[in-house]
Amino acid sequence: MFTITNTSKIEPTTNNNETQDQASISICNLNVFADKHQILKEVNLVIPPKQVTCIIGPSGCGKTTLLRSLNRLHDNNSLFKVSGCVKIGDDDIYQAGVDVPALRRKMGLLAQRPTVLPMSIFENVAYGLRIGGLSDKTQLKKLVEENLVAVGLWDEVKNRLHHSASQLSIGQQQRLCLARAIAVDPLVLLGDEATSALDPISSRKVEELLISLKSRMSVVLVTHTLRQAKRIADYVAFMYMGELVEFGEATKIFTHPEKELTNDYLAGSFS
Amino acid sequence: MLITRKLKDTIATRLMVIITSGAVLFFVAIGLVLLVKGLPVIKSHSLTELLTTSNWKPMKGQFGFLTFIVSTLLVTLLALILSFPLALLSSIYLSEFSSQKIKKFFMPVIDLLSGIPPVIYGVWGTLTLVPFIADTLAPHFVDFSTGYSLLAGGIVLAVMILPLMISIFLEVMESTPQDLREASLSLGATRWETTTKVVLKRSTSGILAGVVLAISRAFGETIAVMMVCGNFTAMPKSLFDACYPLPALIANNYGEMMSMPDYESALMLAGFILFVIIIVFNTVSWFILKRIKRSL
Image (cartoon, rainbow over all chains, first blue to last red; front, side):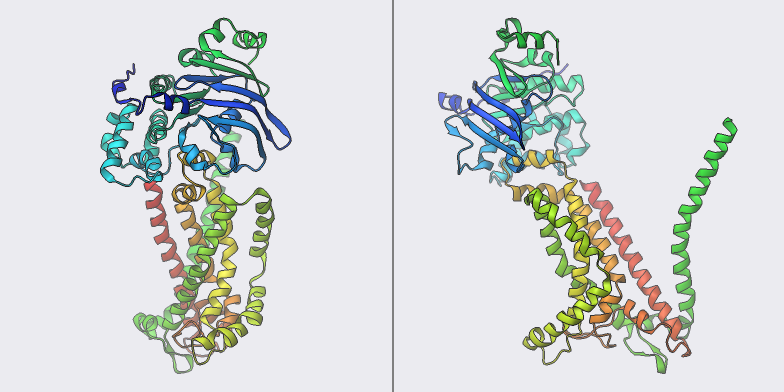
């Protein structure tokens, strides 16, 4: 089985209260429309910093839409309209004049399927760093290695760093994407069913990595599998038909949910 | 029952093999006919002489193809230089930046442009472009130009291959998964950075394939270029000089004065040269494409 041998490498770069607050997300009265269809209805939620928060709920309940509102990925689709506020730390990200690329840099994204860019393994990890203006080669090499070590991929790829990243297995690709996302040191890592395309072993590896990352950043994960949420979540948000039904500590939600709807969903009455 | 079904299967397979090889056979047959018909002129003159001199005096039995070969290459190159940046930027805009509404408006227009018959482009070139070059543009650079020129041919050809390139480029860029764009955006890249570093990078081989197709079309384009390029048998010395590409040579002369010795043979050889240029060109680009694909 996979063990994280290099957890020591994953250390919070700064560990004071300031970054704690910056890594919290408060969502108030968030509404999202796609054309005339309302996908999210008056969502109010505070996601605590440096914890793993899982968003669960049946298909089509708006989990992914919620996640994508957090780094303004709806911006490029003119059909989507967003209202309400989302604050990362103290900054409302939907305010006019927000530097969207800089905002997205603070919000790492791990997609459902691995999204390796059409370049080498090394360049994939270096991509975000280069975009951020880092061009010093030794520094790049150091950071690429550090982050590949952090996701447990270094030993597997150190001899073929300059080979095309698409040659890696799906599980390795997803860990590469994780390395790429955390290389730019985001405040929050967003995962959209980040393990659903992976085999069980790779899936476990990614789960363990996500848990290990919470010392560095907040992790928000949309997931379809309740067992996964049980394994890794500190907090759980349950959504249904575009509304947030219940939010709370994972142990409480899974053992004593307040709402009947949550209870029914957890019991498997509907999915 | 099983035997009949197996028989049908075999017959269908064989039939399809024959039909497919038919297409290849046509290609070989055309090449062979051109070569065989062109042989007499190769025998009476040497191939080097034919390809490296530019004396074209059929009455005196002189057949130097250099002017025509150079004209063909220059017109095509010029068309490519003019249209490639436009096609690339247009398709980047439509694929990555424009709204759905704008795209929905432009796509049919572009398709329409590629459906316009070449002769119309030729007439347009003759009526507007040629006088513009002769009266307005050329006087700034040269003493005299009729306007029927390399430049006119290049521009007309550029306009003709532009819609083809845009639609191919667009298709290639749009095949980039949205996930990849989002991966790049979520690392803090701007749309332009995402376009150049991810979308274009991933589309390189497709874009090159589009260029190859456009060039192949440009090499063979006859009527529109013929109407504006002047068809004068002398090596063009500037953009404002007349030129005479191979297809125009064949179209203008085939069927006339065929009684002259070796004349028909020379024109067939012109066809064969064009044929070879296109084969060489396609083969080279095939190798380049293969290398690019391997590196991605």
